[in-house]
Image (cartoon, rainbow, N blue to C red; front, side, top):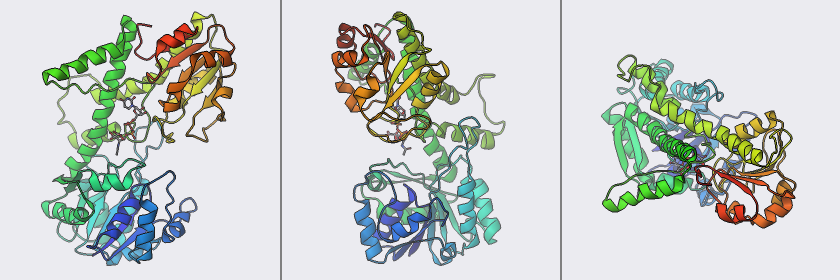
Length: 456
Ligand code: SAJ
């Protein structure tokens, strides 16, 4: 069997390499548009080199192996789709911009039309991209049928196989994660199972309908976002009530002893990344498009999930309030204050900055007339600000030091050293990730503020 993978990104490349390494498949094409921005990937991949940034254990060895064995090749020639048994599409579906919550499906739809143009009877088409529930059965099916003149389910199989891979462990996740496979009909689900089983080691296949598969993927992240929002809201309550959120969380967790589980997550300076910040809106659009007026819901109430998004997006504003309050305690207005911002990545110990909550916080500081210095051990560039390579230089002369990313390096900051660098009698420290123990900092003369720390 011969396979094609459209979209040579952090999902498509490891998937293509694993398909190529399986004995069940004789050849795999990686399809990549020869566009100015991404055409360079074609030559790299055909040399067995990975164009992905960051370490991916085992990926380059695997690419060199399958390229060397002549089992994998990357090409911009979409007509080669015509001779294949199956094609998968892992093309990104970003949101055009943060405000209008309409995803940009243009790249994915272009890929689907390219497949439709060269679709032949008997082929299987699998969508791996994160898509709004209803997309596979709806627009994708229609475009494939329009372009090919074939009938989905009758002439070709069609399924959705959402990916749940984490950068840094792509190959392992594809092999080991259970794989949801949602066909437009049982035959399509069976065909998708045939395609993915050879690359799964401990991962099991979880069959369901295409729309259920789309809903599962978006709901998984929506639910996680909701859990984080619950922790954020409770933390805000604890601050207002003058109590320590982390004591309450420990108390809730202690229920586990009674065989009760409470999966309380962690409050923080905000939620970033490209999954949790958008999958809720995919799910909401799915309900709107498919649910039409079927949805029974408390009249006039906003969706709990969208409210969760709003609470998580509020946290950088709360960090600004904590900063302002801390500075007010020492009579320093925010305007003109020097703020050392620690962390630009959206995730602890990561270089990923997509939708980082540090950005809205930084923007509000500048709008308030504060002076910002930025440090992040994993990030080289940030829009509109130059990172200061040395943490000491970042902190030097600061009125407030604000921890935004949970990078492990920040756990070992020495309050006396930081105070000396700040040169202030009572500098402010704001902990957005519950990273530091307040007492040594307060003992060193800091004004301490922390998410959920109503007791300090
Ligand atoms: N965050 C909190 N509190 C928490 C957990 C996370 O504030 O308790 C914040 C993080 O600081 C970050 C954001 O939420 O800003 C997202 O964190 P994340 O751990 O969810 O990391 P992501 O965005 O990379 O999520 C991915 C997702 N994986 C895929 O979509 C394939 C998600 O489904 C996984 O649950 C998550 O990784 C994971 O568990 O690592």
